[in-house]
Every structure is written in structure tokens, then in C-alpha cells.
Length: 272
Image (cartoon, rainbow, N blue to C red):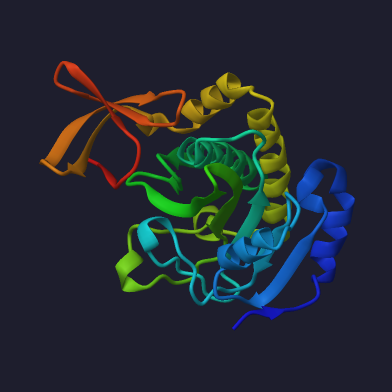
């Protein structure tokens, strides 16, 4: 059940104070005490004609989802659960659009989390923010594109950030963490939300204006595991293993397997 409530006063005040930095993301905010999935709500709003930048935030999700249909752990008060409506200009390739938006969002979220907490957050291709060794997930991103008659209509960009995460289910033990657990002190969730959307407005603006090169350079700097690390992934012909060589201009992960280079566009990649 989706329960929409008034925007909390502290968030409303921050929203107004930072309106210029938020750009399109500062215009329409839908706030839910509980939602099935913020991305499902944003997709419905987009289909009804919602403007680019429409933002949906929930305190908890009962049916949050990530890549490949996986559940996203979304308990009340533990994290940020956010989805925004994007309408990329003149985009025809929905796969590439979603991939590049995911990369831009990774840069935005990593830079925002670093700015608020000072933690050395990294990006793990294609859509996770991680910290530490072994790497533990602190945030996830999912971009879902919708098209009609061969033309991209909108992209719903959803992301979840583990802010408190006092306890995780056994299935996530050792693989997930939170900003507060890593920092050892409280973190202002409103600051994380506002800074992440302000950074997203900037990064998405760069992408929309065709300034992809500098954005990819920042992504590479924030994703050290994208070069020189051993990975495995499943293919129709069985398990493959290689060494990462970075990403290309379409956002695909490039892996060296013997003398050859292979592109990984989608799927699960395991860092060894």
C-alpha cells in the first residue's frame, strides 16, 4: 500500500534552500511514509505525463527491487529510497541511455556521499556503491527505460542508500553496510538526499549536454576496481574469467581474457 504524506518540515526547508542547485529535481516532490516501490510510482507518474525531475521518496518500501528483479532491503527509517523521472533528449538507444544514466548516477551518488561523510565511497560496475576491503555495498542504482514506437519515452532512475542499517538480514551479512556503521556517528539523511539530487542534477546535465568524457574520467577515478582486477562472469558457454581494463564510451565493462578484449554489457560480475 502506498501511503503519501506531507513532506517533513526539515526536508521541505532544505528543498527550498537548495532549489537552485536541484534544478529540475527541485520542482515536484512526492513523499511516502510507505511505498511498494518508488520506481513503480515514478513510472506511473511518468506514463501520466509527469515532468522530468519529478522525485519520489519513501521512508520504507515493501517491494523495492534492484537489478534482475532482486529485492532491495528497505526497512523503515534505515535508508533513502528515491526514484526520479528522466526524459533524455533525442535518445533512441534505450539500452545505452540507461547505461550512461547509471554511470552518471554512480558518480553523483559517490561524490555526494563523500561530501557529506568523508568516507572513501567507490563505484562497483555497473550500479553499486561500495566501501572497504572486502567491498561492502552501501547503495544501489537501477535505471529502467521505457519506449514506444521505437523511441525512448522516459527513464526511471531509482536508488537506495543504506544510511543507518543497524542490522541486516543474514543473507546480507558481510556484504552490506551503511554510512553510519562505517562512520561511527549519526548521518543526516536529509543532507544525503539533497546532496545526491544536486549532484545528480549536475552530472545528468553534463550527460545531456554531451560532455561524456569528463564524466567518464570521474567515474573511472571513483571505480578503481574497473582496472586491473580479476573478475568472473557467466556466459552461455560457461564461466569466464579475465582482468578488468576499464569501461568504454557506452558504459560497458572491458575485460582482458588472454590476448583478447571482451565487452560485458549486462549480467552479474564477481570480483575475485
